[in-house]
Every structure is written in structure tokens, then in C-alpha cells.
Length: 123
Image (cartoon, rainbow, N blue to C red):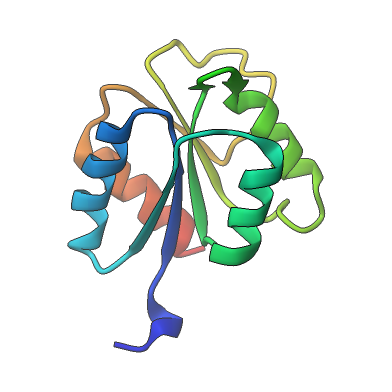
């Protein structure tokens, strides 16, 4: 399999268990997964530049950071504006104050997550 065909997903969540679960789900489908535990702007920007993800799974609460703010920064930055973002949260996601490409409520249904990720990556 060519590396050009391998899709890359960046997981930004402060819960290592979520990283492990997502890795198990998507590596079986031959996606490359990279996890980030902190939403620090500079570190996240460097990771995006280096890893060049095809999609970001972003938790709303990442330690002291707010995923909605991160989502807004990504969507307003010309370098990352077209990068699909799926927000993950255990909270009700009405009135998000940001514009992710999709949302998933925790605990998430694996099939639902797979379908949403695939739909965005196939665009």
C-alpha cells in the first residue's frame, strides 16, 4: 500500500484511553493515527505542519484548553481552513460557537464514528 493512500487522523484529546480506542478502530482500516494530549496552540500547529493530517478529531475540553476555540482558529487560518474537524464531547453540542465539519457525542458509537470519518475523508 502506498503511503500517499494512507489517510492520517490527528486526535486531540487529553484522555489517553480515547487515543487508544481510536487507534484500535482506525488502524484496522489502515489509517495512520497521531495523538496529542494538549491543545497548546504552538505545539498543535507544529504537529499539524509535521503530521499533515487529513482530519482532526478534537475534544471540546482538553485540559485548560477549549476545543471550540481551537476549532475556530483552525477554520479561520488559511493553512488549515479546509481541514475537516470533528468535535467530540460528552456535553450537549447545541450552540457550539464554532463550525466543525461534524460532531460526535461521547460515549460514541464506533460505527457512527467510522461513517462520519469516512464521509469527510471521501469528500
